[in-house]
Structure formats: structure tokens, C-alpha cells
Length: 507
Image 1 (cartoon, rainbow, N blue to C red):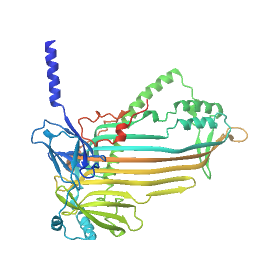
Image 2: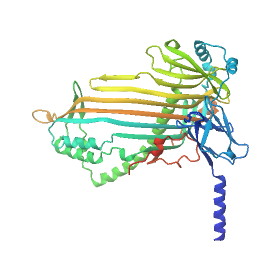
Image 3: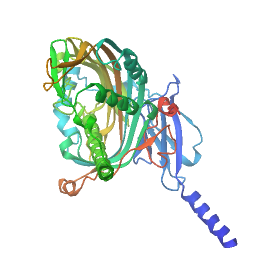
Image 4: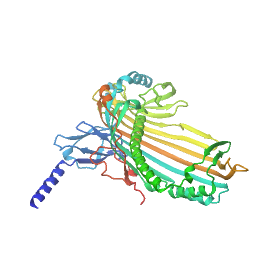
């Protein structure tokens, strides 16, 4: 027992000594007391994290700290701050706005007009940014919010008594009217930023936070539906589905009528097991492919690419630019320039441009009109919102790479049309028409999708080494019914907002 106690004590001490410390704090403007988002917090100038929209951040210390270790905090428009880790105790960090002296501005400013600055940005675009193969360690979060504002089905006629208004209303009542969903991944991505065909993703860890109770389960309805179909619909029937002038034909699924014996059931069970294994593999593959596509699209959504939606550089004559101010970032001055469309372009925004090399280090953008607006014959779709931020920082290669990106998209969809389903059977004597279900449907819903990406490390990668990397879909997301602060313990991530922290599934 004495040896066991000694060994246990030794293990406990070892764990405590090697446990990763973390620093959690909020950045606040010393004058306005407002939170400071998108500040870079690094340990001894090495890789670090970015504060979220509420100014919160969390950073893990992966080794025993010494008196020389310090946090360095940098943010656009604020004086850099350095704090010794050994003396760090506060959960609130105040940053002072950087006051730029007039003589400093005169030294840096060459009295360029906004047109000349935009021209300089274009001239240096291919030189300033890294378009080559790189290895990046990143954290990505996707948040989805759905709200059904209208769900009406009015039964006008039904020759099948069970398909009545009460049955349809019960299905509509089972549908959740709103839901939110969060996916987070920590990964390494290899290749050319924003070029999906030239990228490989290695997911380290992933989570999926959502409420399973809001998943629509129609198993009981499916069983009831099948029994109704067997009772009233003939095996060799087909269906004509019409909505106004539009129509289509669907054949009957004969499996509704199949009777399975014991031996067949055993064979079917084995087949189901094999199918589940196949499904599990496909789920990992699809998760990796979809997330790689999402990350690549977020990277591609940048002014540095010729096919970007942000054409304020390539078609600058369509915009009005205004030099609003000078700011300060990482010991460099930046121009603060706002832009807005003269006529029919989609976006307005603000760019922050390094006065030395004319690199855009930050872009804030927002649409000024709906990006898509469709309304015809009872169908409507509107892409009414797209806004976000892109932040670039200079890497060891002396070129700028993406450090942070976020985007928020809002869409609306609606349908208000008649719907008629007619059962027909060509093997029945007399009229082919057997049954009819006629209704008016009215659905409306809105979706909001927010994506966030922070890149912690960027390292050069040769094309030869890129070719040797094999993409392996080995990770699937771990389901979380509620926010778990321990899930990402030991990893640097974007601190969650309050909505995520408060999320909890209904029992």
C-alpha cells in the first residue's frame, strides 16, 4: 500500500507539473470600455490566437514558463502591449488607442491620392501575397441558424380518408420551427490557399454541437404512411404530381408490398451491418470533402484572387474611395480607406493598407443590396446578407498570408403553390385514375450561416513534399449535446460566443 501510495503521488505530481496552463482574458478599449475583436495574442512572437467578436481569448502554454516569457498583443489602431506571463493575473486587459503624431504621418505619407493608392495596391498584389504551397494549422467554426416562419398545408380534396387535414397538421406540428447547429474542426491544410484542387486536409479533431431533439424523426409517420399506402394504393400504380402548369411522373415503390421471411431477414441484417460500415466510411470521407470545400471557399472569398466577388480593385472606376484616416498596426502605419459603389455594385467596405508596401492587411465588407432576388410563380429566394472580415499578416517568407476570416450569409426561401398528387394505374379496367390528393402549400424559412477561420501557423511547403502527402478521411465529428469547455482543452481555438456557451439540448 505504501508503494502504491508513493507511485500514485508521483504520477499526480508529474501530471500537475506537465499540465498545460492556460490564460483566459478579455481585451477592452481603455477609453470606450468596448471589447476589442480580432486582436492577435502571441507567446514570445510565436504562433498565437485571435480574440473573438466579444474580445475574449484563450491561449495554452505548452511548456513551463520562465521570467522571460511574455504575451504580445497587437491590434489595428492600438498600441502594442507586452505582459510578462509570470505576473499575469487579470482577466481584463486594457489597450490604449495609438495616437499618431502629425510629424509621423508626414514622414510616412507621400501625399498619394486614393486613386494612386489603389493603383499601387494592384501593382504589388502578386508580390505581396503568398500564392505558393504552404502548410497551415487552423481552426474552423461553422454556425447554422434556421427559422421556419410559415408552414401551412391546406387539404382541398382527398380520396384517401386517412390522408386528412388532421394527419398533415400532426406532421407539421412535429417539425421544429427553429434550430441552430455548430461544427468545429482543428486541422492542418496543405497546398495553395483558396485552390481546392491543390489542397489536402488533415483533420485533427472535430465536434458537432446540435440538439438531436430537433431532428425530425418520421419513423412512426413512415410506418403509418406505409400502412395507408398498402391499404389504398395498388402495387403497379404510378403517380402524377402537378403544381399549376408543372407536372412530373413517379413510379410506385414495390417494396411497400414485399414480405420478408426469416432467412431473408438474417441476410438482410448482415447486409445492413455491411451497409453501416460503408456508410461510416463515406461519412468520414464526405465530412472531410465538405469541410475542405468550405475552408477553401472562405479562403477564396478574397480580393487577392481575380475571380473574387470583391472587384473594387479590378474595377475601381465603379467605386468611390475616401481616405478617412491613418491607423497603426505592428509598428507600421496604414491608410484607412472606405469604398462604396457608384451605381450597381454589390459591396461597400473599408480597407487598411500598409503605407510601406501597399498591402491590404484588413478588409471589412458588407453587401449594399440583395445579391440574389428571385420571385416567380409562387417560388421566392433572396440572398439578403453577406458581410465579413479578412485579416492578413506577414509570414517569415516576407509575404502576406491569411490570418483570420469570417463571413455571415443570410438567405430566405418561400413557396406558395397548389400541389396535386394523382394515383393512376394502367392495369385497372376503366379509368386509370384511382386516387387524388389536392392541397395548397405555403412554406417560408430563413437561414443564416456564419463561418470563422483562424490560422495559427503558416510554413513553406515545396510542391514535391505536397505530392507525397496522402489525404486520409479518418475523423468524424464528435456529437456534443451541450457546450463543453473541456472539449478543446489543450488546443488553441477561437473562443466561442455567448450563444454557443449557452447552448444546451432539450432533454
